[in-house]
Image (cartoon, rainbow, N blue to C red; front, side, top):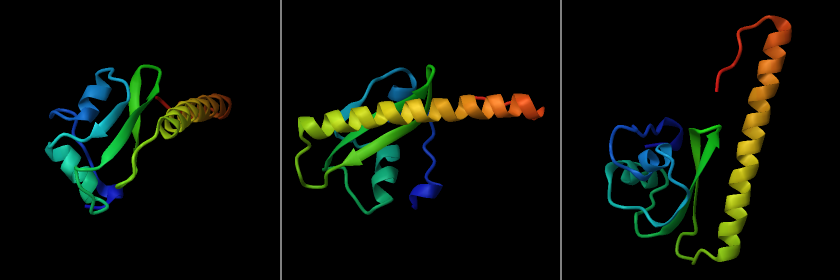
Length: 115
């Protein structure tokens, strides 16, 4: 499976479903579930490595998840803090982009972009 073609359904148990339902970030090893196995298969990884999943939301809607792992290295608190700040910046950037697109489409008469 290549990452660009990976689709994780949200009607089956996974950490992604948990995040869609409002869960905050996750740190640790991914539980053995088909969606998680599909994800790590994208780079020939495995479920034995620690990782971080940070939900990226616009409003209350989950739009993507920031994933990071360290392979065999330990995830430090400094790294976790940096990833959480990166997630917050990504949310802000995506929100600004959507607002700008909505404003542009309102001026030009195009249909608005929905979030």
